[in-house]
Image (cartoon, rainbow over all chains, first blue to last red; front, top):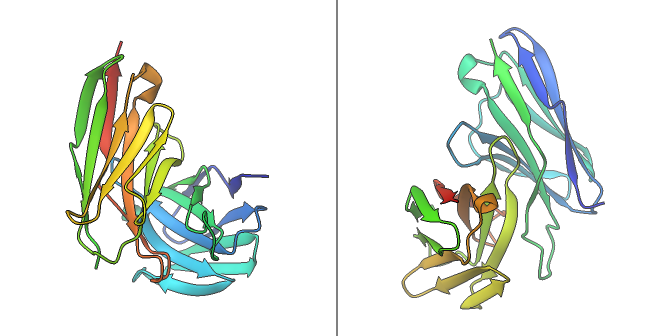
Length: 116
Length: 113
């Protein structure tokens, strides 16, 4: 299995809702990432988990809360979002250890989030 | 921190011609440079990458060159085809700094039939 999967594909939520985005990989990768991508912009790193521990948090507002239940799963919990948070949310994974392909990131298809 | 610039922002070529996209980075400690292709509504897909200990890498019609002294790297696509039309992103990574990729702003490539 060489894929990163994400659910749901699309999500529409109000500013008072609580929802979660899910990401899964079965490549044995030990690093997983959340990115936010606005239209016509590059992916912007939000969080990095390495060996199930949060290693980078790029000053993301607390209304986004990541969780890594195990080495294959990554969640992003959403609460009290703003309309400007509407974007494509991409998950990625990489081997996260030494080796020739350790740094190569594989992206999931993304969740297109709309906040009303 | 790292800053990655990418040029041009848009590029139109005739089918069969070559396309070149150039990126510059600011941090000399960066040591891994991937290129991603993103079609409309789809995920970024890795097309080629290069490490700082290599000057050039080629994979069929795609090649990447790296000039560490000048801190720039370039993507070369030869014999372009309409299906090469997409947005291309370069990125730079400092391997020992928490795997924090910094992406360039992207180049929209259009291959005209």
